[in-house]
Amino acid sequence: MSKLEFIRKEEKKYHDYCYENYKLFEEGSWLYKPVKTVIDLLPILIGKPSPKVLDLGSGVGRNSIPVAQEIKNKKGKVVCVDLLDSALDKLKFYSKEYEVEEVIETIKADIGQYDITKNEYDLIVAVSTLEHVESEDVFENVIRKMALGTKDEGINCIIVNSDVEEIDISTNGKLDTMMEVNIKTEAMLIKLRKIYEAWEIVNQLVKPLEYRIVRDERDVLLKTNAITFVVRKK
Ligand SMILES: C[S@@+](CC[C@H](N)C(=O)[O-])C[C@H]1O[C@@H](n2cnc3c(N)ncnc32)[C@H](O)[C@@H]1O
Image 1 (cartoon, rainbow, N blue to C red):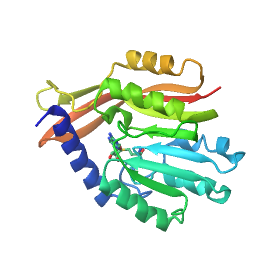
Image 2 (image 1 turned 120 degrees about the vertical axis):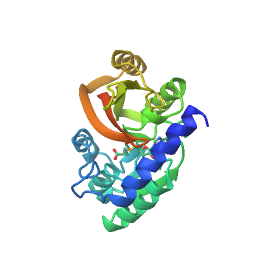
Image 3 (image 1 turned 90 degrees about the vertical axis):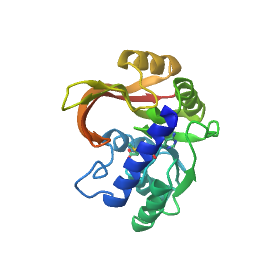
């Protein structure tokens, strides 16, 4: 099995478990609340007729459901792309529960291969998903497609892990990082600023985070610099 196949298998196992065992907007997991950076962007959709939003790696709708609720009465649409059936099945279920089924469109695809319609979206969101495309080239390519898919004055909201380290807690030894794309923080920021050179930076933030996770029955400390990068097309 290649490293990519192994990472994808582990990612699927982890997400299938989360989506089956934790309920959206209930305490106890990261599904508890939408990402504040995304929610803070909602006022930009208010003045738009039929706002169109793309959520790449949408999961079960932690962000896309509140967005859909906001634009429901404006004939808006949120297109949600994810690789996993477990994510999309639960997203459809929650869309009914939160009465936004007519707003949410689900697409099963690898975002690395997904063609984004040009000049189509007012807002494109990619939260904790771009680091899971198959290579750095694909990563750049997806971001370029996001940029082209955005209407004038539209927003791209990216939250992406960088400089990820995994440390075996019992030995304090560094482990091979199980992340498809793992770029140094400064290099990632340079890449993003270059691609979005002509855009206005609305929000740029680097947050060092640490999580305890379990890998192959080993307690592992995962360290990351989470980058928030929000830009507006001029
Ligand atoms: C950490 S979750 C975040 C979900 C959602 N963005 C949120 O903030 O709640 C990452 C999601 O991205 C999806 N994903 C990972 N790699 C992907 C890929 N290459 N193409 C499409 N979806 C992918 C996973 O299935 C998972 O649902």
